[in-house]
Amino acid sequence: MGEGTKLLRAVLIDPPMSAGALRPKLPPLLSALVMKLLEKRPNQRYQQAESLVEDLHRLKRLLDQGRDGDGREAFELARGDRGTATPGRGAHRQLQGRERERSILLSEVERSSGGSAPRLLLISGGPGIGKSSLEDELVDEVVRRGGRLGRGRCDTLRSPLPYMAWLAALDDVLLQLRSEPARERHEWSRRIVARVGALVPVLRPLLSQLELLLSHSPPSSSETGDAEIQAILNAPLPELQPHEAQNRLRLAFARLLAALSVGGPLVLMLDDFHGADDGSLDLLSALLEGSDLGQLLLVVNYRSDELHEDHRLLEFVSRVRDRSVAGRHLELAPLTDAGVGALLAAELGWSDEDFTRVIIHSSGGNPLLVHEYLAALVTAGLLRPETGGWHWNEEELTTAELPKTLAGLLRLHLTQLGHERRELLRRAACLDPEFSLGELAVATQRSPRSLLAEVQALCRAGLLRERGLKYGFVVDGVREYAYAELGVRDRRDIRSRLGQLHLRRSRESGSDLVGAA
View 1: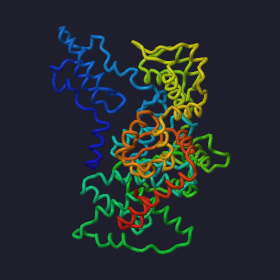
View 2: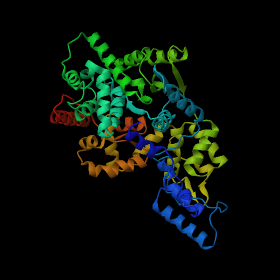
View 3: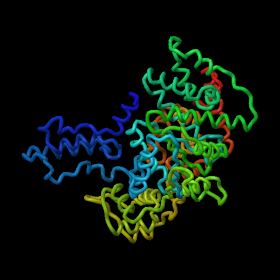
View 4: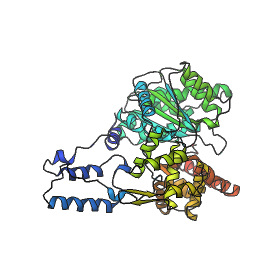
């Protein structure tokens, strides 16, 4: 495990030693308060400074009265956070009601660890059912095992670009390798070149992070074999017939995946694969028929309502079912009543059987619909925080003129935004599914610095999410509606400016790449 991976694991997973263990005389409640500040998940920490200050004052009063806070006191941490954020609109939603599915997900990572043949995990379901949220549970497990995880998404708004999800996921992994210390970057470069061999030039124009990894980690001339490596990197590619070139590309992908899966599981998450191009589906099929690919797990999610009866993805469902392909298929159903209750308790910090019954009836157990309905109720003043819980009136809820569908609630969410944030989302929708702040700056013709606060506010509102150095829409439906609101001329202008940016950067780097933004 590299130093960068060890640091990532320490930050994301390894629990810190408790304050009480370090200072045994520390009051237990003060130790608990410190540990809450150190929670790994942002939504489990204090959400505002005022809530922390309130708890410190309450704790001081207890200690001044000679009570040591040994756990016998009724003391709820962070109660001041209740009602400060709109339920359903947080950037860090907790997974609820998916214990069985989560267990299967983690077991697939375990099975892929130490294996030599790839495994396929298919996750399907309707919009808002929680496919991406379930996938997010993989991150900690993969890092804990010293593995790598990359994520790519198909663009369902425009004509599919060849291998789009594959390239994004692989670039994601390669970017992580570039964050390693120089010595380990150098070792990864040598490992990739040694495994991919003469096919490295096939991939370099397609993977911007591979180009950067190899060019910024040049083998030193004093090491054995470096001359041969440089010869491979600079060798011209022979021209082939189209079908031969496709086979060569698939072989290059397979060799790169084998190189990247050394030392720990390699997990590629390919989202919205119902919109994949034929080349992406051919590559998936070819990889699953191969072996000697190391510890590779391919997690493919798709919307089941987008598959027609002869869609090629159904072939993979059948192959998993008849066990000709190693893996599992998870078809996500609506949450059970207990699952909805757990979700409400996590969002509101409060439970009420009658309120839960109303939400179950209104949402049909769709997690995203629960989140959006809660947010709409709070915004409309139909669900209000009060001491010890929330105030609501069943008659007001049942007669409220709120949208009854997920599509309607998402549109309502958009209309409640100010003009500037709505325009920002329209232009973000014209970018790739995962985009950088720099790309958004080009689309909006604003500086990255001026955009940062707006983007972070949209993340807190649950409309955008941040993954590493990239951003994306939390919900495909919001992206679709925002995209539809922007005129064709504006869309073309944005794509033109982005193309010019990519071309300029490729020329500055001295490569033929056009996708290194």
